[in-house]
Image 1 (cartoon, rainbow, N blue to C red):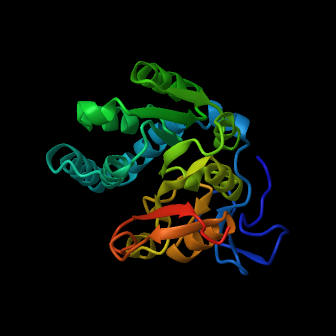
Image 2: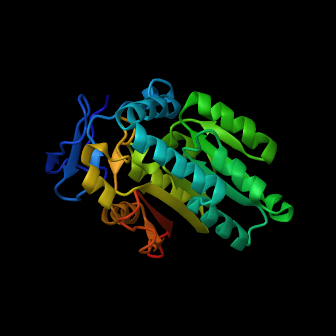
Amino acid sequence: MVQRFSPLLAVQGREHDLDYAPAPWVLKQCAETDIIFLANPPAYEELSETYAYEVTFSKESAARKQAEPIRYAFSTMLKRFRAKVLKRNKVLGILNQLIAASPSARINVLDVGCGWGELLQTLMTSLPPALRSRVAPHGVEISRALSTLSDDKLRPLGGRCVHASAQDGVLRFDDNYFDVIVMASYLEHEASPLEVLENCRKRLKADGTIIVKVPNFACYNRMIRGPRWSGFRWPDHVNYFTPKTLRAMAARAGLDVVRMNALDTTPFSDNMYALLRTSKAR
């Protein structure tokens, strides 16, 4: 484990404990910036295998299924219905729109925390051939097993997956390289979110966009369900954002929020979305 304080501060500020996390994990809220964070997250090295996403996801799913079997079954059915019948994937829809509007001859896309590469693979298969030939999909993934799966999928599509923490992996690409960077269900996992956002900003083209999707700590479901909220994951979620703190994080990283509307931040959803671009003030 490592010890950390508010990722929005350069030095430790006033903090108070929140009674949500099971031992030995310690969840705190910064009194000065309001951001909620895990004070003792696993080290990056542990996230490669011991606390890799596929490991903790399986354990968390099994625990939720045992604790609330009816709710778990309904939630799983609803997710499958949205994905397969309604074909609803907000991040993918935004990504398609940005790519279709891009004037770049070569459109470089990066998925930070790409998992097994499903989003990028789905993106490439959904594009018309003429547009697909212009897109190069890249990923960064800290899980050793998942990064191998992603690389096997992305290489034939003209891209690759870097096995590394996002903090290190993003640095392996050139500045001003990406048209779109995706952070879907990633930023809540990152112990150094400000540094990663700054690194991503430097690797965006002048008109490039970062797509962010994170759990919304300000949602009604969290207020009603308390410690049983689906947005809590121990210990791999280390940041819990609200619209206010996500905006503050973006501003500190030199990024402007160009879209975060009422539908993107509705308290009726467990998740919220934002589109970020390099600040015009820079």
